[in-house]
Image (cartoon, rainbow, N blue to C red):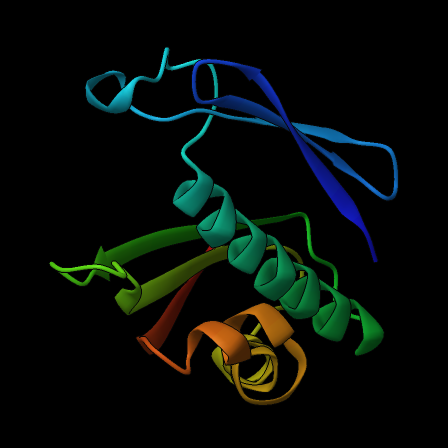
Length: 137
């Protein structure tokens, strides 16, 4: 897996993934940014959310359950001093589909958190990660 990150202007960067997709990142204006992209630490949380969401949907569909939508809402806290690592992260999944049960969705979230989501497991080395979910509709 490869990613390249190239300076665009000031502290605005374009990351290009090995699969050919671009992600724009920028710093806040008070640190020289122009607000032309997400903050790098936001992209880290987004990656974790994508990884965990992929797992939850994949696990549920593998069990032949219909998943129509899955939204992961993520809130995080960072350390006050450098390095400002994440210290607390909470993922809340909103899942909708046919025939979903608390047991099935809960198991999928648990398997993602404990076994499959490498991003969550890595970030769990510095952060206390918690999960919750609700079935919508």
